[in-house]
Length: 232
Image (cartoon, rainbow, N blue to C red; front, side, top):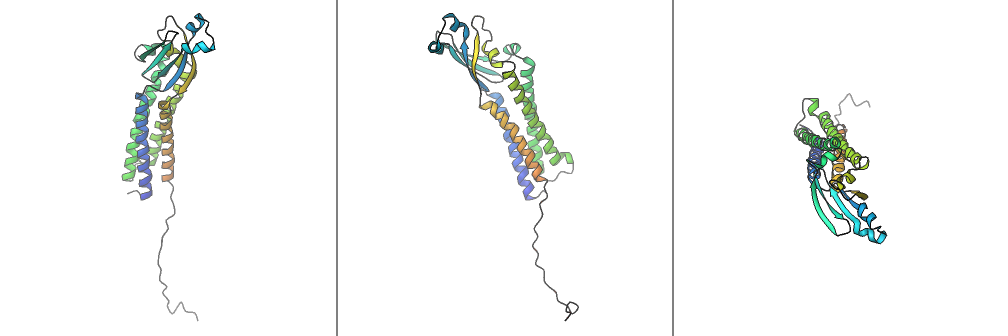
């Protein structure tokens, strides 16, 4: 049986792994990874809009991995609409990169659950195989955190290098052209960052569990005095 200290650490690590799993699931299902402001460039150019008039041409957009919405402002009032990434819009985006982000997160979910199970196992008993012990816990947390980092990095690349927001804003826009004025990462994106950080914390806890602290033993020893001990 593991000691009380190790039990506490692995119980905490199992809780963190489960929380990480929940964070990724919530992030994937929420349509607000990014928000931004769009400018209807075509409309603004047509009327030669000045700064005070540009407000009539500034709309909003938000999206996640599977769906989103936007408010189009082209001078005649706002028009709200919602959209889904699959199956049509993804063809106009960087399809491979977008699918990779989703796959990375799915793999991270799997390894988070594996990490959760291994932490529970180590909190209950001492496994006889190394892969089921702290080494295995480190491995699964490293993989879960690594795939989460890959997903986050890929999404950053899609936004900053492949103009993901602009492509989504201009999807099926035959007349008007929209440019992005402002982009902001929302809570769902930061949930994935928190998930990756959680696995880093688990690696630290697992490393601490391997430290052998000196045991303090209190013994009451009685002095036995014999004739041989008395020299004088």
